[in-house]
Image (cartoon, rainbow, N blue to C red):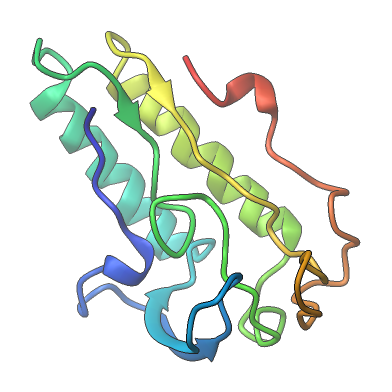
Length: 153
């Protein structure tokens, strides 16, 4: 498997980053992270350019059995942490969905010889099974999702 994480692991020179604190699901302490706005047009262009170079280097490598498709979230998954500041930071479901679709298309084009895998979660949800979380979008949970038919290849 081949996977390079982005989001909170992005280098400091990536433009338009923001720093915030949030409460992860489960019994974890508050976390403060710095990450790019993964729907930002500059980030999307830079990440898809990286994916093309990544594929040029590793698509023909027989040691690669599967390619994970990170880049659209805060770790390796295409999901964001539950933080009430997303809308003020420019987030919309449409922008996020568009970014995800561009990343998926770029991975598929860059790695046509390998199966791909995508871990994703709800873009924004207002509650979890343990705590009440602040809303991060005006869209109701579960109303807009990436196509599950595109999850693996």
